[in-house]
Image (cartoon, rainbow, N blue to C red; front, top):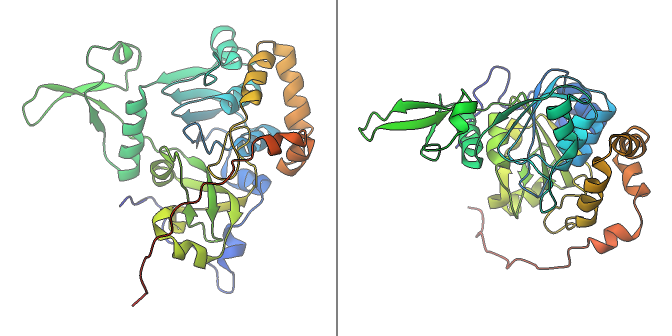
Length: 325
């Protein structure tokens, strides 16, 4: 069991006469304004799925600056954020437009300092997994063998080697990763932040336990009874969640299992747009700055998009948890 043993974080803080609902349930605007300051380290995770584009766009709209962006697989949302000048550093293990090619805004930032220089800190996939696990468990480091014989330790001084105390020789270690803020997208949560995910969950749980502050963004807010009725889907407990945002379709053009599929056409379109600096800036103006919130963004989409992305139905077999004693 992971535990966030950090000052000021633990059981929900509640003032006398104030409901948990009023404490945690916020708009995306207010959650970003309250918990994502300039200069913080931020992880918007999600391994191909559950990528919270709505949060990234709100951060751009609020013109945050000097962020350290953290993610195992930076794709379109970080490309857009970096194009908007949000970040000074990227900590990652792979970056690209999945199945398409390069992230052109990130390339411009690295190669030409447009719109500003971008520092890179690169790991392997398993190196980032290890960093999140170490961060979630408050471990001093995470050991792994996969860096032996690679060039990454030559360009990343945070990857180091120590002598295995059990006598097998040198072994690579990576430091814990504890983002100031994590933004996690999921299918549903109750008002207290008890969050349920299913499908390709990636490292969502570990990132939440590793972070200092956690914003959960969900397709649905459900009653506590729904959460209690299917407890094994609850990967993130409310006691570590600081804000709950109800934002249907908040992961588009990414996907949310059972709610909508991945919008592959949007990924292809971004590759075309982002190759040109002026076209990139025009897209940000039209789809982010000129759009007040996610509701307006969805209304702006062609009505056929969400019909095309309908996931269909594949229901799980019911299980019997037994009667409560």
